[in-house]
Picture (cartoon, one colour):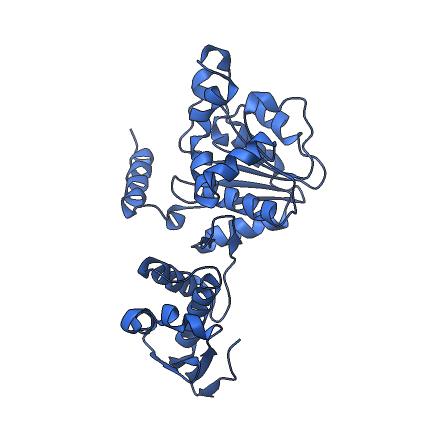
Length: 325
């Protein structure tokens, strides 16, 4: 907790207590490099004294700096030191929060990893998953559709608010006829579910993922194998939903059971369906956009958080698509 602030006009003088004196040096960094990074990022005065970090300057900047320090002290509860990248991340996370407010933080299994939605669109997406039983999210590559859905699901799993995490994806390239591929069912579907596994690997250890899969806490399955099931107390994520047919989407949505959430993600600019075949996700969004308990989120280029080139690539392709002829 911070001590009572002193405010003069639009200036603020605030002391942020150091939670653990033994880790003060880790918080400050060698030669106070972490404090200097915070000072440079927010343009305020930063000084350590009397068991606290004193912040003074513009009200909004001071509050954001205090939020960054709060993030760092939270990490030091389970770590002995901080890297420059972790400090940079805390500063960025505090910068995108509303003044003086903590952004939505997703608590996953990996120690020291804090996942925070980075844009207004991403924050709306995360809140939608938390608040609704069914969320559709359409958006371009790199906007966090899959990653954030998995992060919310893993958070709910860790908090024991759900019993299972089910990941599915249409295997369009194989026409859902997976029997022609070599290996057992796991080997057959892994290529299609690789992006979901990549997200999981960021959020928990390989041994834990294997243990959860062996115990059916985490299940990965092609969309064709969802038929006839009712899924209770689970988060079910359908990725690449632009490649579902209308019939497949109808089948999937009716699998929703008690105390469960569904997240349907897709990029409607990258469908692999046969020409003239209507995408199941677009059909569902059209049919269900007025249904209570369902929210439809559309992310845009401004929500892309991959390499900066991804945004320019998406823009270039969209511009080409809009050109006549």
